[in-house]
Image (cartoon, rainbow, N blue to C red; front, side, top):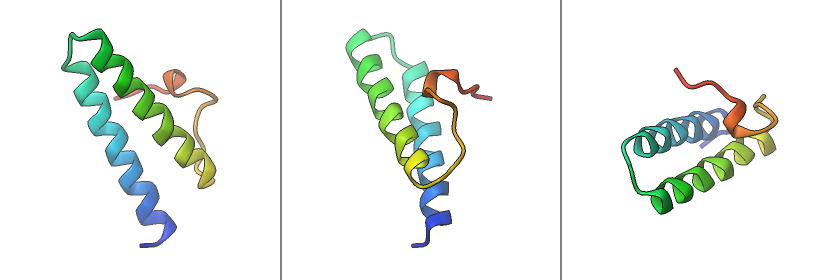
Length: 61
């Protein structure tokens, strides 16, 4: 797997995490999913992908 494939998969994972977060009303699960998104966000940053300073500053469409 090359770096571009990794970046694409991480972005897909973030989309799935966002969907799971939107679908829960359990605060602890929401916090865990936000933490997972933050780790994926920093993985993209470390791979050189342009991302916002903080994951919550990014808009999701």
